[in-house]
Image (cartoon, rainbow, N blue to C red):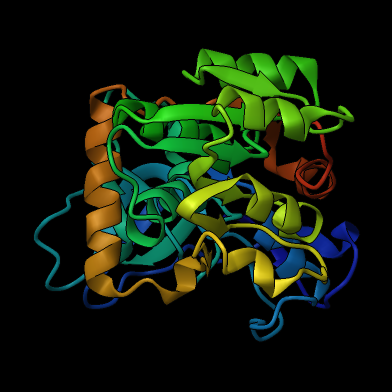
Length: 320
């Protein structure tokens, strides 16, 4: 089978397409014939060697994918060959024609969803759900700001929050990206590069602030988020690429919370809750992942460059 292999950490070009043997499933394992692969920023951090937890070399990149069950191991009764599934957090790498998965990391892909959309579930969909409901404790009727709403996580968060009857606002720098956020159900979307966008955001809340802010770039926006929060509001840090200095007193007057998020910290019960909800949301079309670009697996290096560019919207996937 074709598979991407990384023999040394470094630039995108360290990913090389090679031939590997199709894996055999062991007990409680499943082999999935991959149709679409989710490309995530975390894939690039791992490939470059900058992530705190790194795999042993050589390795095949990728956490997420969607496809068809090809074979099941001993003890697997819930799945059979031919089932449509998506894969979340494969330890064995998904940048390949086939991937080996633990049974508890495979989930039903509804017929209503494409394989590309399934490939957007493992990291973006799960991060959006965890940010809103497990870390953010979102409730119907609350006012939420998705700060950086045009990426795969942000758009999923907007759709899930709208489906929960929250009052949803977003920010994005690119005009076409802002349109996608509006189409996903946000009431208003603001350009976070505009000089006065913070005062405009405050005005739409009548200076009451936001109950919940989902933050994709804390190294740029965290101090601004603390200004925008309501009394006892929460900001959930989903993305960060550097250090920032803030005044902790900003959390005291309104008793606001800063909460971090990492999917790797989700326990088994939390993962079950996340993906049960995501499968239902996909099937009911409350969640409709937006795919911005599909590239062949041979162009994995280009996908790694594009996924880090600002101004993009939606999900980048590789097709096998």
